[in-house]
Length: 213
Image (tube, rainbow, N blue to C red; front, side, top):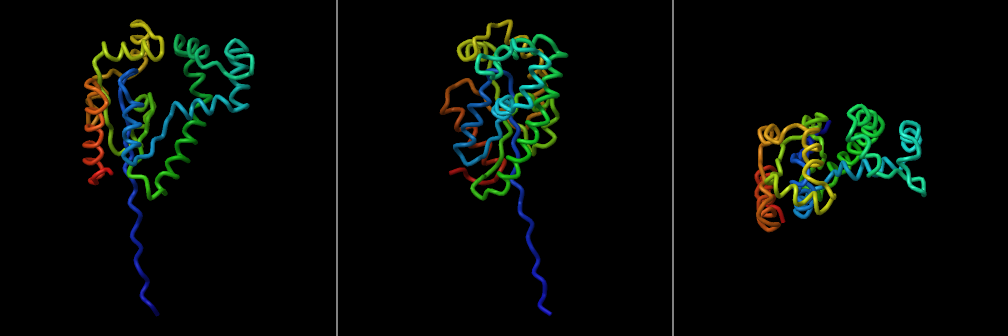
């Protein structure tokens, strides 16, 4: 009888969780990781897709009425956000609607990326990684850091937020100092894209023990 060959278990790709406050540049960092061969799971995009689901729209309409819908029957994210970010109970209600579907999407994407030989590592770009305990599903945490005045400048330009709005959003998240302490790596996003790209390359090489292409 021929001797049975041993199979070598497939090495799972490392899962990198991104931390940082609004305006720190997590999405920019995620894009740089993608350039170097990582797959990115974008929680914001998954949530956006979930809001297009008819069953979700029915639940949102039942809870908040037509005021959060546009003329085409789509959810106005700005209107819905204005309500839930001012009311913790409303925010929890919305999360109960969308988070299970977002988590299902994350699980499917992660399985696909783990099976893809072209993927070097998987990056979780989730605004509330620590708050939702998703850090426990990551192998390593990377903090994207930037001075408060620079974060304010960015969110003012890209989201129309003022200092009070940024402060309110920060207060709804775990403090930045706690995120820094939780991270194995800190990338400083305060000296331009080239400097940030070099840091991302160094961090990825340290995590994967491979030289990114």
